[in-house]
Length: 81
Picture 1 (cartoon, helix red, strand yellow):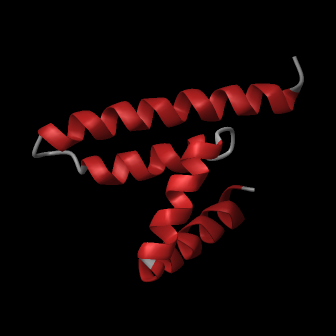
Picture 2: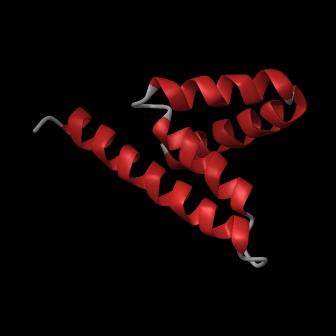
């Protein structure tokens, strides 16, 4: 398999893991469920259009949070790439 295919598969698996943790976190008081769901949607947005659509709707609804998230992601990419 090509490395890009492995990256897509890895992001999809990682995204679903974070989604499941987020759903569990909605019922447990020690986990921030919404945060894990957003992280999962971010990873899934690389391979699925529905996740990208949900993230775009959230970006339009909460532009200040989206700006902070963009800053965090750009710092994270600089640090690890």
